[in-house]
Image (cartoon, rainbow, N blue to C red; front, side, top):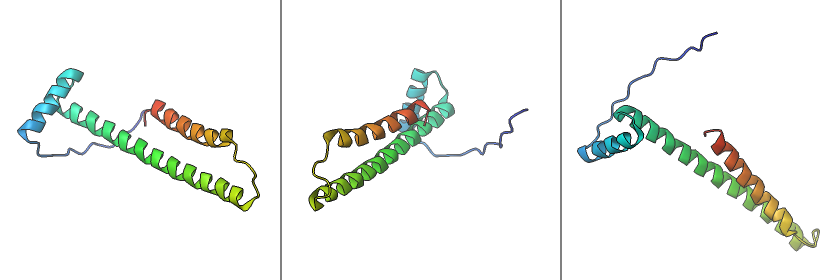
Amino acid sequence: MTATRRPSVPVSVAIGATDRASFLAEGRRRGLGLSPTIRTLAKERLTTLDDARQRERALAWQTARAVRVWERFVAGSEREVPQAEIDAIFDRAAQGTERSRRRGR
């Protein structure tokens, strides 16, 4: 079985002389030409943005969860919020972020 690839579509972007020199210098450090360097840097930036969005979602979820626990505490239905429960929430979110990094996201 052979994998089928869609033909790539070239993208043209105007690059100023200063940026081009920076890309070329980074490419030399990495042993890459200009185009592979730009593709690599773009992919790395997309990964960074994706990781940041995942952290933001995790923080929002963790905050909402902490608020629910706090509301139960204030209402008297939960007498104590164990620190271990709070730590576990943050630990699970951190582990999820580490797993996605190892997968190359």
